[in-house]
Length: 254
Length: 254
Image (cartoon, rainbow over all chains, first blue to last red; front, top):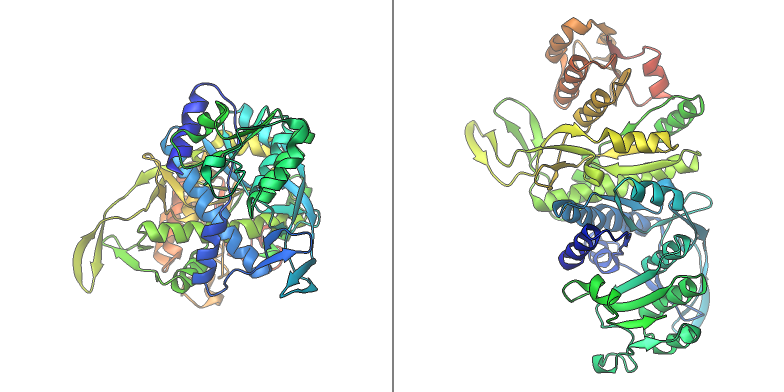
């Protein structure tokens, strides 16, 4: 987190305009366990794994994403001279989308439908609010949840939310950091990094995406289709990780 | 919470401009207990009781104030058609102040000094950010913590933070809601409500303030001295509590 924040501060000092989007899934698992409401992960029939988000889970999710991590990031950035403002998707309806209240899952080989899920997908971004802050010298630090059309908090994937923001703002670059160097031909062998994928073949990248990387690639494909210049999957564990990504390290889809 | 939000929505529809400030002390106690880091309250030598806020407590405080309660309020207001934006004092350095790292306390009849406290007092308000949001149709929903001059999160009293905001914005009215009808001559006898106190005698109100009410009155005295038109201590448990206060119910200091 420190390296990312330092990198953000340096890039902003050089006059770059950017928006930071973060998640908090792992930390949410830890806090949920401690609060006696352990996480439950489900796999949809289409093969995506997600957190089953009942109302109590949504509250814990908000405590960790919006309260703990977002404020830690804002505090760190402020200490580095960046005038950060933390926002969830609820604030100013920043990230708006459709709630998928029920989900068809596979559990133990059987298919069933689960209800009461506060989960969804971002379909609209309040770019006016982002521009208002950017144009007045603030750095938006954005976190899930989003808000449904019925004004409920909904758990959305942070990487796909970042992709939606990049699309809405016609960003030149979307950098997606994780704890691997990029897309790997043979996961988890880091020597098999794929350095470049042509924009027209972006969907083929799905073949190399494992687990949580699948949603990241899905977001990337959507962002590229909507006109974002480049998507770069890069290593979040190195010094100046965003700069390295913008310099072409990682997997560049362009 | 529902009645306050509905009231806010109605007042905004009538063209009133307002800012909502909330706390979350009781809920923080509950979550802190569940997380195995129970709250510790200390009484300063000058007689004010406060939460001893070590770094872990600050994290829990942020989870509850910024993550749980702030997002619940924003979600509720959004469902009522109010375009609320939640902000902590860290965001955009909205509430800036001095950290008091050590505190002289009385414990068991003895005086000692405690270190490592992330606590302080709001001295500066980023009115530019508040005006930016208000002028663009957003309702700021503000919560502690504040930020120190060294960019650390600091626990500040929500009522005094509200007073500082009212001062900074030259508000006509500062309404302080609690679970009593106002200042009581003989606490907790609600039939002894003091309906009105002259501005020039505001400091005498301290004599009627018990426990947590002491900081509320302290904020009120400061706000009045700085030019706020009226301070109203009112009952947060009734229907349309803000409107009732503005209509003069509760204890009006003017």
